[in-house]
Length: 416
Image (cartoon, rainbow, N blue to C red; front, side, top):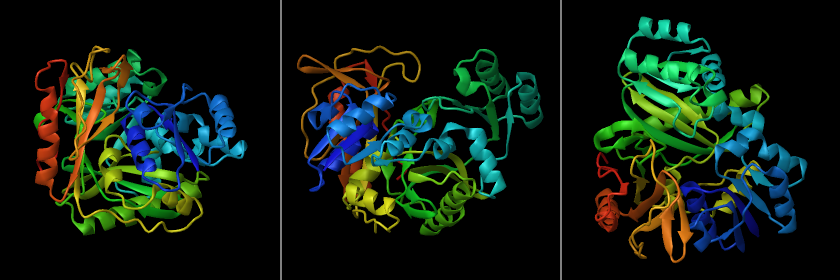
């Protein structure tokens, strides 16, 4: 069959690599893709939100399945458009993708259905928000209600920092309409982890947990980013905690979405934290998470197309995973998540049997790759032990030792 992947980042590159392993997949197309993806699939110059053109392409190329990577086309209704055109697509409808598109909606849903999460209030008025911050004190978390490309969250360690964040969003409109409403949450302390699940209505089929490193610098210091690396599975997370998450978070939310008339189909991402008061939800995403996808999918033993078809038909895909560890470290442009330069030449990226290289923000100029985003690459490895996987990744990353134009964390997977 022919498969179309929508998106242009590291997550989509990993989806392509996974689909290419399938004996059932003849051709993989990616719209719009990136330089690294073009080495393994056919990239098509169609914007991820140009639904009419994507649908025309899918019909022309007889695409059997379209898989949506990023959140924006989902929240804008690509699944609805495809279904109206009679085409197969994997992902939630616009009505269900609100679980990522509005933090206020999702916090309200969890409150209504008693899913454990941080205490919160939502504000559109800066003065009221600032009074709330002064009443609650710091640390405290400020979130733009809408989509902000992973950058709309400020974990404020002081009241001043929290007030600056509120003013930035509500008065300076730093995130446009996405920040016209802010959610202010209590600060939760503990170890974070992510759990993906394939969902069809009330049916929930969980994958294995992963841990993302959000802060830019070693030892979880610096600003929040879209993710600087990840590893899976988590030896320090008890099976009972995973079971709790499935029974008290994933399944209740799937049922809640059905009750709310927003039945969910697709991949549901739960961002979670283990606190002294138990596991609580930080956020939900309506798609595969990035960079966790780059360490979870390499461990999946099933054929991804088999899984998608089984889930879509309401059957248990019987997920199985390798008895191994995967670690991936992001190489970012100097200055990320703030201002950074594009078009910087990357070092040579040789083939390595111990590692895989995932392109996130690259393009090709002549015979060389240049940077085209904040998060440029991810270098990953799958090995029998965490120690071996880390050693392979950091050995490969020595290719970046002689440039100051890029940086990466040196402690990804260290806690494992």
